[in-house]
Length: 112
Length: 168
Image (tube, helix red, strand yellow):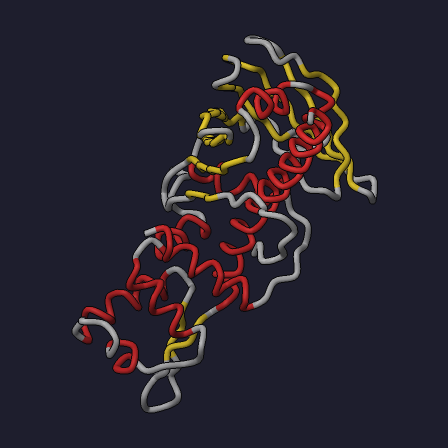
């Protein structure tokens, strides 16, 4: 099977859940403990831990070992890969459609 | 992205779902459907808009009839070339173009792309779907083919998160 095992697919799968994206959003502002992460959600600690495990497996989040409160940290690298990918595709078509729009408007101007 | 504003720029929506092998993009263009269709099927017009600005399109083959072949090379200002080719499976004026799509940088990975054109008053809604042969093809094609070594930051990351959030 060559479908689901590549890193980008794992990343996208981890990003598919709104709670996990909210966790990442929060972590993009800085480290947080599991308790802190659980607060805004209506979730038990085990519930949050489950989401964190998925994010860790996808390489999106790491958890510190040193401090007592074992802060969770966003690993931007993997997310950047996903962001780059979507960004490239978007850039291609955003720019294409802008140019298309320019060409269309130019033709419409001439027809007036 | 897309905060720079000239006149009202077309805003494209993308649907890239985890584990699926297609991408759907949707945009509304301020022009009648016949004209949009022409921009897709006339080689001179097509060359003027397809792809990022930093590439010049060299149209090598462009037979916009059902069964016709197309082959376009994008030439960067540094001379790098990216070739694309395919066959038009179905061209129904002014509604629909269904064609194969292959990036020659990764030969053998053929995608099927369908663009439909829908008149919305005097505007045209374009829905483009591209279906890859596998999830891996989908996730790998653009990364290898349309890369540009972009400079990224946390900003884009947050943007991506917002986008993914908005999709739900």
